[in-house]
Length: 398
Image (cartoon, rainbow, N blue to C red; front, side):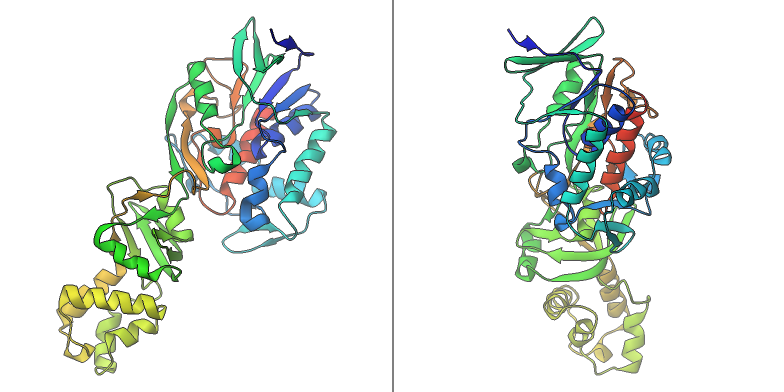
């Protein structure tokens, strides 16, 4: 029989970004808080984020930069705890930072500074932390949740699920949050890898010869479009633009890549008039890395039976070539899965939660925050901002 320790007001499962943030500020509000995590130390995903410098938020945070079955759910939390709020917290700890691109904020030093910030805030709130603690059972009776790990057990009237999703399993990530949610009758939107490289097969596998080549593009999946770099890999496509569209992509659908984002429509027709003896391959080399230009030109030549000089190409053929370069379709065979995904899309259904407090509607005292919830941000600090905002929403309600 497990030995019951002193009861707490709140037990937080998960010592990642959302869990530590929630615990810290609930503790500072006078709540007796316990954090449990199966890992041997806190914030493991934080430590590897942003190339080790932690892209801790994005100054362009807005509701339309998040995916969810309910596109309105995250508005409340994000509006009440903003990127400016977290940045003020960062500065209050004397952490130097810089903006990289597209509003992404990074530590000048290392991601360890963000973990240390959260732990310092937990200390201010007298938060009790237990690591190397694998939860074996969670139950609810008489208005209290009882959490058991081996021979130890803790109880509290409030339980916060902050264990994230299954992305990056090598760090111990799993679907524990979903199993726990279902145990208490909460629905789960099917989890899937997001911000993940896509794989190619069949004739498209020929592009594997371009592994390591990158170029600025506009990548599209359905209505979503992102202007960033794409990277060819030995398995398919990656790079920021591809990771972004991967969150919107569904298996069986194509994605579209514009290899000429800096060129106006009719560019090749104008070039035919101005430099009729120019070779298409040479013109593409002026716009793209040489290996990519050659591969695309070879494909276009084979598909459209193009002659060497653009002056000998018909206007119709040039229009087709330009259209192909602007809307080059790839049909991914899949993704590289949770092992390579930066985050998880899907998760505990927002229909089950209060958008203001993150509390389960049908199970008072049960909260879910961060990546465990069906809210997924774009690449570039948005998922951290959701962690901070959802954690604070719960902390202020506990």
